[in-house]
Length: 340
Length: 122
Picture 1: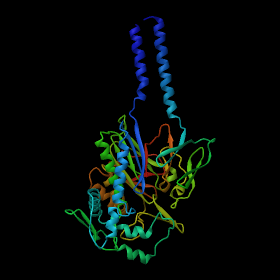
Picture 2: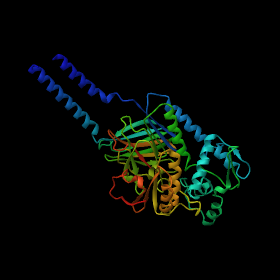
Picture 3: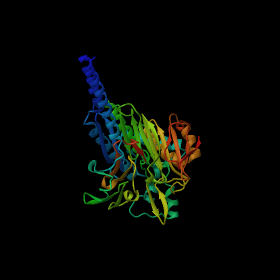
Picture 4: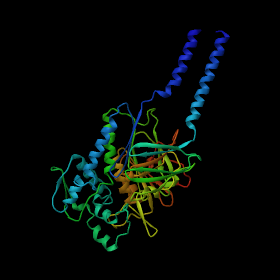
């Protein structure tokens, strides 16, 4: 009998010990790429977050347009003069940008820089540019001025007034590179956030999916309006509520349409993209936001394993087929209006 | 099996159930905490209670952010950053929400013992 008793006691001890045998979660906030990057990874390796931080800083030094002498700054400085030989990292991002520029039928353009600088949204002295100046500048915001040479790995802006900025795609590249480093280190469970978008790796330690909230794009003080679960893959949102300025009671946001020269105005508050990797989700969220519901949904439905959620200013939700059973709407002010 | 053994087993089982129930409800307690992080380091954790309501000033590299804490939420009241994005964001209330002041590497996050969401996509 005493053996039985001992067994019961041992089982109870084991049971109460279950909760404390978890692998530590390493977290790190990195300020780079003009945003915040958060790493949450289950691992015993104390060094990995340092390695990741170094890699992020390395990419920032190549791709930031505000760091003098970065490869992007060199391309801009030598616009109309000379081609610039770039690293594999930068070339990979430029090629991906070219792909999404073509897929989106000009909606996604890294050559938007002259307009971004003209509007300068987020600066300390907001003002709306003069309409004639917008017209003058927007003609230089065209990807036809950007030439990439596959053999030489060079980039050349053929017009001295043209310029590039990788704000709509480089963050996605960073997230993918972080996930790559985590995987190489043998890490199986992590959640990485770059600039508000996320990429999940392998769910949580107990194999449960990560639970992600989607911020209310109409009123951010109301928290999240929907949740969804994700084990692997990326979720990225682009919207008019992220960066904006208010001039004479009018709100101007940071997503500028190269065709009009003005912030996109198509009734959309935000577009969220689900994809297997972050660079695609990042570029597509901007592209599809600019394209609008009709053409945007068409594009998303032509790409495998990619889904989109459109949120209009009227709180209508338009989703693609794959999201039908994945979204949990928690704010009853929002409702799914259409499935495309 | 002697009756003493039986009583002991039942007592042990009851103790285990009580412990597990206590543990479950303890972690489910709705107490929200505002976690203030500057340059990647947690500088203060402020439970959202009546007692802690007030204004807190955080200084870093010659700059400041003033955080207002109430029993229901947190907001950045004032800051000397150029873009004022953090001030414009308003109040956050739910676990998982955060306010980021990029120029000052300053973050206020609301956390609960058990967050309903792991991250909020913005």
